[in-house]
Amino acid sequence: MSKKEVKTNAMRILDRLNIPYTYQTYQCDEFTDGIQTADQLGLDHELVFKTIVTAGKSGAYYVFVIPIEAEIDFKKAAKAVGEKSLEMLPLKLLTQATGYVRGGCTAIGMKKKYPTVIHKSAGQFDKIYVSGGKIGMQLCLSPKDLKRAADAEFSDVIRRAENSSEKG
Image (cartoon, rainbow, N blue to C red; front, side):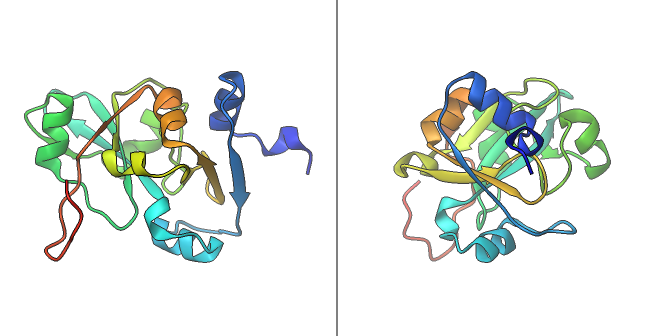
């Protein structure tokens, strides 16, 4: 397969911004969650982040990039984007709103530019993994570069596990 055939919209944007990244592909015939993807690629779970799209009470959409083992805290997330409340974007609207499918959604290069928040824990790593813009592809890049490419902010937007030693 030639390089040109492999490029996703997210990769073309990273190239245009001169942001360094690597990517890994994996066999995937149907949606798998981030944990299954990390396990299949042999990646440390704390380095892999998932992309969640939400709808605010105002009707606006918001994107959150959080660790694969975490759950979004809707109250913290709403506060981070200045909304009264948030809920998950219905799956039937995901592709229409973002241009991406479930399992291949990334914060880079959506159809429209939505306010985007990356969980602040990403900042402690040199590199993190996020979806590459299609099922079966993961991008590896620095959190600061993801922030720049997605025009995002860092904030604490996840629920704390009961026994978590992580400070948030």
